[in-house]
Image (cartoon, rainbow, N blue to C red; front, side, top):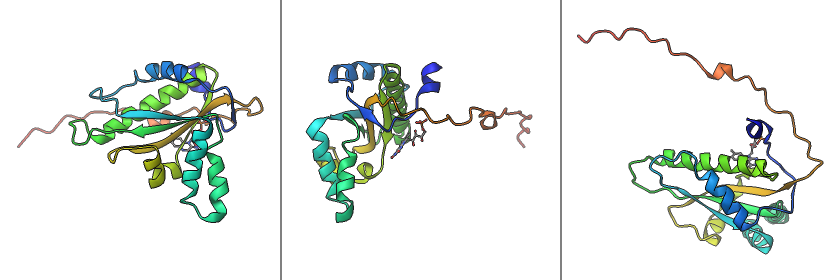
Amino acid sequence: MTAVLTRRSKYILHEPAPCDAEFAYLLNGAAAAPDHGNLRPWRWILLRGTDREALGACLATEAPPEQQERIAQKALRAPLMAGLVFCPTPGHRIPEWEQMAAASSMAYGLMLLLHSRGYGSIWRTGRLCESRAAHDLLGLAPTEQLLGSLDIGTPDASETPARRRPGNVSDRVSTFASRPVPAAA
Ligand SMILES: Cc1cc2nc3c(=O)[nH]c(=O)nc-3n(C[C@H](O)[C@H](O)[C@H](O)COP(=O)(O)O)c2cc1C
């Protein structure tokens, strides 16, 4: 409960970020998320250092000239940028929306584990998800889809947590009061 209630998206992220081994360790935990059919319909592509620059430059090629510098810089916001790739099994008896739900559950679990470990993260979507150039640069198969990326690193001490949204969600729950089912004619 503490991890769930204290996690917030972090916008300013510094070194250190988890190394590859620590990322893999945390992902082993996140992979325990519910996954109908146990398909693991996802994978991560980790970008650090100049790999982020290459992705930023790639995204910039699709932007109008006056926006290119700003777009390129976005890839450098965190020391670790983890691209989340959705890898559905087409035509499987488990519908694609359920596979995406499994990928989403895993990603949230990873965010909670990162937070518990003292790291900050934010799930970002935007241009990356639509970019044909990024799809090709990252070597995605035609059936794969980028669901965005997690920016990951150590949160900045100055980033005081914004107030959490109101916690009362009782209006999102109702009780079903069953009535007798009419007898068939
Ligand atoms: C699928 C998904 C995509 C998101 N994309 C963006 C994004 O492109 N830019 C951004 O600033 N935040 C993005 N977010 C983060 C949300 O804005 C953030 O989770 C929300 O404001 C609640 O804040 P919290 O994470 O601190 O509770 C995304 C979150 C999800 C789940």
